[in-house]
Amino acid sequence: MLVTGKEILQKAHEEGYAVGAFNTSNLEMTRAVIEAAEEEKSPVIIQTSQSAITYAGSTEIAMIVRLLAEEASVPVALHLDHGTDWDVVMKCLRDGWTSVMFDGSKYEFDKNIEITKQVISIAHPMGVSVEAELGKIGGVEDHVKVDAKDATMTDPNEAVEFVEKTGVDYLAIAIGTAHGVYKGDPELDFDRLKDIKARLNMPIVLHGASGVPEEDIKKAVSLGVNKINIDTDLRQAFKKAMHKVVKEQPDVYDPRKMLAPTSDAIKEVVKTKIRMFGSNNRA
Ligand code: G3H
Ligand code: 13P
Ligand code: ZN
Picture 1 (cartoon, protein in one colour):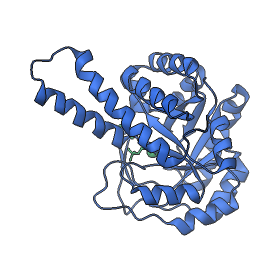
Picture 2: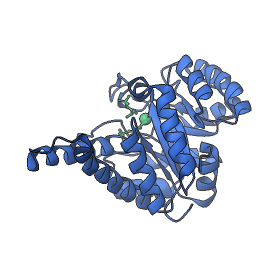
Picture 3: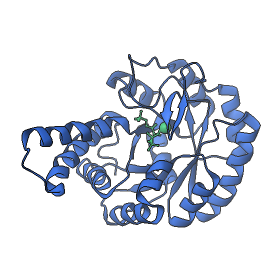
């Protein structure tokens, strides 16, 4: 069933687990994620970046995810990941996303509050939940590269003021993760997470979670992270499976036969993450 992000994440916050938010840009990835969630009896969030929307088409990808979500036996939300462009955010609201992220992390604190508030004033009456970001997460996202030295951790005092002033439904915080492939193991600031969660009685979002060791993920979940974004791990599983087909079955040229193993690989990664995040058997 298709639901809002808040419906999924408020329950996760109250019951103390995290839900995976997996990036998609086509039919095969979407189906793989939903099938994995159904097999694990888990709620799930399917998210599209702005560049995924440019790639697939806004109406097209919305129709694919919404249809598969409506047919699913578990709760599924369709979320806009890192919405930095006002027009794209508005289009997603019109096209049926049930959750949007307005990412104003490139703005000064007050400007981030101002635009986030404007987005919420439009999204909430439409029944759409809103995520915002405070602090700057490192790595590469949507053609924007944030160098490690420019990534800034979320200030707990600012987080309280931000949430009070905006009324955002869930907050993405920067505690040391980064988008893309890690060079070494990331160092997460768990004390900061604990402090922020203690002051904010609401769902917390962790970006850049691919490649983060399992014990760190589990600790982050135990300290109050409720939405965990995974993209790179799916892309790498896709590539590995595709490479294997090309290498081991050079005569295969039917795209369906080439794509089936990539979907299986993505499905396995999603199932593993679901169990790691503790959202299995929660639907
Ligand atoms: O956080 C960003 C996601 O990994 C999306 O990346 O803009 O290449 O689709 P993308
Ligand atoms: P990774 O690509 O590092 O998994 O990050 C995903 C993400 O944060 C999407 O918003
Ligand atoms: Zn992200």
